[in-house]
Image (cartoon, rainbow, N blue to C red; front, side, top):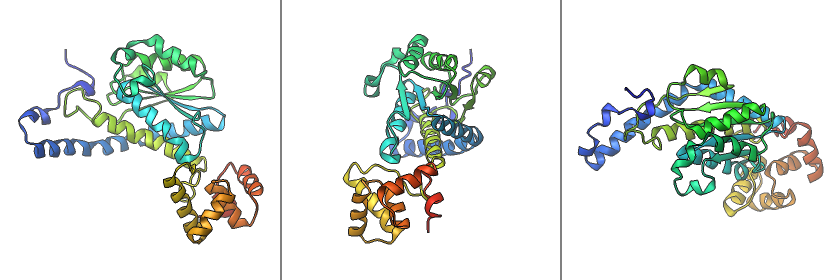
Length: 299
């Protein structure tokens, strides 16, 4: 039988990759990688809908939960882990669930993806409710762990989505609120979906969470004003944001950030309006944290 899943088909352009030099292999992989961004772009409307579903979940007090196995699961966990330091949100807001648990992040747990029941149980462990948005990630579209999790999510009333890199069957689009299917084509190494499919997955997840954070007011202009000053790099970035937006020198930015409790967004409002920390936080709370609605557009 011919394999219908794009992720498992043989790529005619790389059939003789084993005869190529290092430079030729590099050029071939790079040529294939150039197809990824276009494939993701063709799914722009579905991705935008996923952004909206995530925002709706957050505003209902819910969460965005990624569910995947192997590389797909790791990418979901990675995207979730980057939200707190980048945007100052709770680690609970965006979560990654990977078949086999966190041990699977560093050591493959190949059999873990085959259990429908384990996927459902993973959703029960997270106490999923109708306020949540659960996005399954399975580039082949067939992972039982992911399908089990999504089935349980629907039973619990959550909104659901599916991200895959092959042609989505009709029943999949009928089951879920959104289906995202960037068709990147067969991999350079047959079935090695850590390559183009994984790159497409990373681009999609980046767009969903970044778009959602922007719409939630976590960005002022294009500056990450809700970052957490938890290390020297982020301290430096926070100071530079204040220097740029408020025309302060380094010492002034550092002092203001300290008074604002390390909160860049609050520091901007304090300085722009001449108010104290509590009043700045109150003003931001009134407008759901959108800085521009308090102090105007970025200069």
